[in-house]
Image (tube, rainbow, N blue to C red; front, side, top):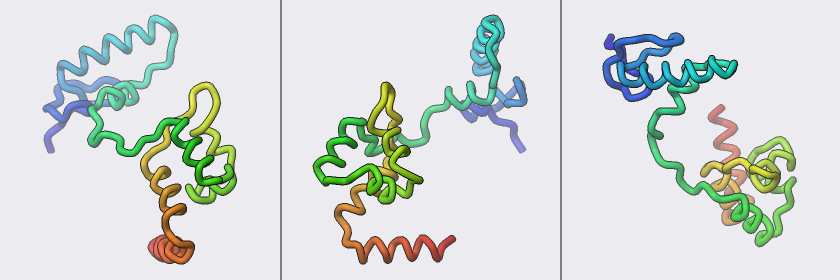
Length: 136
């Protein structure tokens, strides 16, 4: 089995922190590791390497916090209702996407769930949820 770089997929020639890397990425990551260690921080080579990867696909339908707030307001959806629609544990989870100093980026799957619950009939939602349940 060929050893490949965890960042780019090219042949790996080195291992740093248990992560296989090509020569170029090993040098770049080693510089970052040295900088982190010099400042007394915790080194996580796998996290550094993962952060350097190109995304496999671009994020689709990733709404801004204001777009989420506007959608909820326009459709008169409470935080509790939104949590149920997105299969979250409660309205506090919804607030992570709509408020605070740095709200989280909502992913396309949650955005889809909100729209599906608004557009589809309750019977259609029940059919989908039953299929989901049976596939567990």
